[in-house]
Amino acid sequence: MSNGSLQRIYLDTNVYARSFDDQTQPTIQTEANAFLEIIQAIEAQKLVLLSSDILTFEVDNILDSNKRTKVETYLKLCNEHIDSSDEILHLGKQIQSDCHLRPRDALHIASAIVGQARYFLSCDRKVAQIEQVRCYRRFARTYRQTYFSVMNPVLFVEKLQKGDLE
Image (cartoon, rainbow, N blue to C red; front, side, top):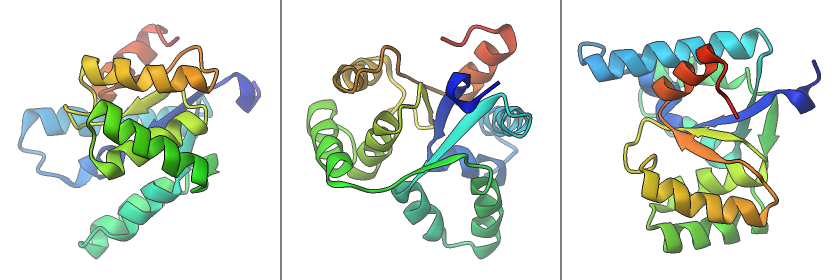
């Protein structure tokens, strides 16, 4: 199967870091387990993982050097990198304004859209709210993406296991 026919996904920085957060909280543990299942699917070449300059920037700024090193190991699994560009900055500003998103979150979404990701995964509830997702989809359509979805990694894994990915 060529990379062109595989699902392209983009993981927010918080998804990569979830395995290193407080695992005594059930939600965090469930999200961390979902992340590890996603990593297995990437290693089995069932998904194409995208990275970006904003993702690299955020990982480079993780204060805990042990955590940063571990997250960097996961970033090496990325199949494609989306470089910063005027296009991403412009789209990010539009998303920030229209979707009422923080600047870095908007740059992640813009990078995923420009990189033609079908799925953007985030543990941030505000980023993955249905109203927000509708807003992002409007921008994705301008990039001729017929499908763009933002969701929590747990829901993504459920869809992946059922074979329900669009």
